[in-house]
Length: 160
Image (cartoon, rainbow, N blue to C red; front, side, top):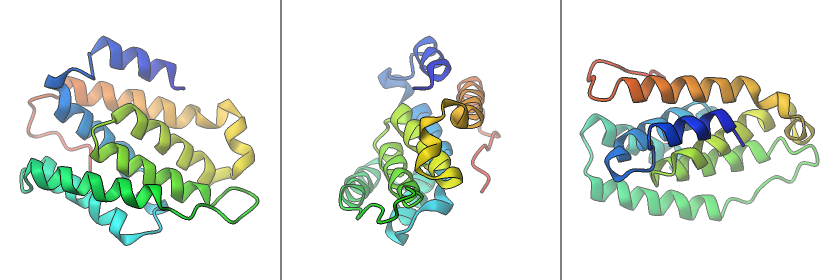
């Protein structure tokens, strides 16, 4: 859906095995932007686990366990009972976290964009492509920044 992001991802070969960390970092950055929309503390704890992994204080095997757990939580989210769709923001945010932990960065970005738009304007807003533009622009800038900062231990785009 974010064509500029898709082009950038292809340009930097985001899906290459050697770019796993970049995918996790970008997915994390996107999920952080919608953290306030999460309804389940366990999902936020899984997101914190990704933060710990990226900082070097959590093993890859534990990250994989967290990814399985957050996928389970996302697949069992009750969804929205509201006709305006605002409750869908929590579902989309949960799926953003699940995809971030699984290393599916572009899917994490897409769910985060939906969560943002649902959270701002309800169900009707997602049919207006312009509603996504601010988030799409941020996503491209973020991935471009992270790709340029590979190996730079001093950069921190995760400030909460």
